[in-house]
Amino acid sequence: GTAEPMLAIRDLHAWYGESHVLHGINLDVAPGEVVTLLGRNGAGKTTTLKSIIGIMSKRQGSIRFEGEETISKSSRVIAKMGIGYVPEERGIFATLSVEENLLLPPQVRPGGMSVEQIFELFPNIKERLTSQGTKLSGGEQQMLAIGRILRTGAKFLLLDEPTEGLAPVIIEQIGRTIARLKREGFTIILVEQNFRFAQTVADRHYLVEQGRVVDMLRNEDLDKNIDKLHAHLGV
Ligand code: ATP
Image (tube, rainbow, N blue to C red; front, side, top):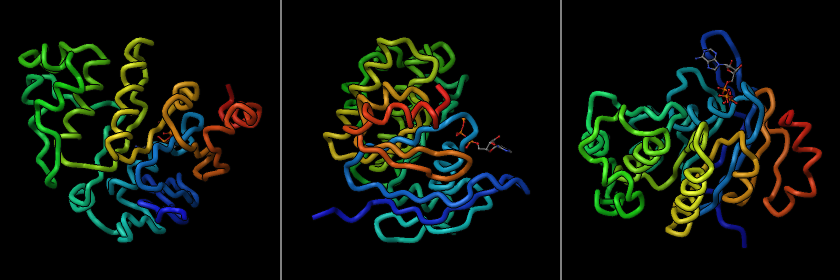
């Protein structure tokens, strides 16, 4: 049988001030899945993640997480339910050390990774423990940003373009990390521009265009739908 969705979004709308940018997003994510949001710049992928974590001040529709409606809940309450957000800009504090950055977000629920487990996942971070946040490479900052969310106890992860601007060898490492998190039972929504990378890690892909989900592709069907994908992504 099909598992109940862990996250179910129905007819989601969102606004920045008067500007209406999401026009009815519908999508489901099953427990343990890795799902991507693919689409051009400005399609509404980041806004969808911000709506899920509750930081879009004006949003409407339904977002059910583990059966519970979250559309009117605060970001703090949503985080406590076990959803973690790693923004595109990563949010590493320049004046804090790596260790301080890692320890900064509060543990929202039991079962978060220990600092030792995060080091095991990202050995590079351990070597840089006393460095300032800004001294890290883009890849190290991304690993730190993911690592500190794992410490909070979140089990549903929203990753916004984790590979952006990174070297191929670092992108591979991020890919291996995502695969490992999936094996360990995490559920992930990944925003990606790089659909070749998306293909190496995801189970399914939602195509987002002008604030709507216009198609869903299973990973195994991606290659035979390459023309459709190119049309949507404009690549
Ligand atoms: P990108 O990869 O460029 O972030 P995206 O698919 O994630 O693309 P969003 O960032 O969700 O797109 O943007 C959706 C729409 O909302 C775009 O038209 C964008 O210009 C607009 N937008 C995004 N952030 C803001 C903001 N802070 N204020 C006003 N409009 C915004």
